[in-house]
Length: 211
Image (cartoon, rainbow, N blue to C red):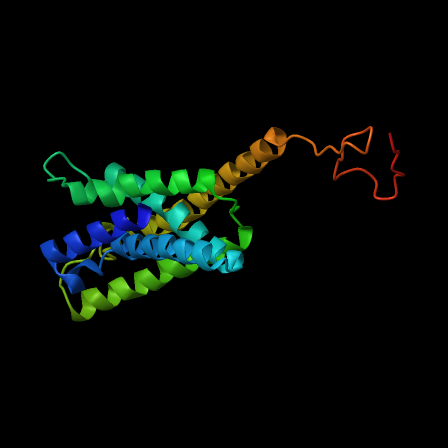
């Protein structure tokens, strides 16, 4: 279901604006990465592959950035004169809801090492790409806050960097709450041959007492 949603939105976006034009936007970069994650998850479940580390890293990136992008779009870029279509809502709202649902259902945890990719590597690559696009392709900046000629340009760049880090911290906090909830909701293991529950935290050398 999740992958079908992404495929439909991507195809509709191509039909509306063209294939090349959409890839100048950070939103569409992340939306495509989200589609890749869901496709990867389906393949992993079918072939029972053990690739959780790499897939976990990709999930961390798309999960964190989806909420950052939605916040920037609705909080900074959106205005009442802006014509919002179902494609905008799909890429700045519905996708985040799907990722939040996936986060709640899967067994992945947000890893600290993924911060390098989510908060630094991906935005830096896009920033360099946006400069190249502005220099050689279009006169206007892809996003107005990237315009270095404005007085508050440096603050915008610093704010976006800190925003990536802040949302990653929030995602890690949610991950810790998820792990705590799973641990507290899992009943202790028991055995009919023992008179005490099996607790993984007990001493390994504790003698077993038969009934």
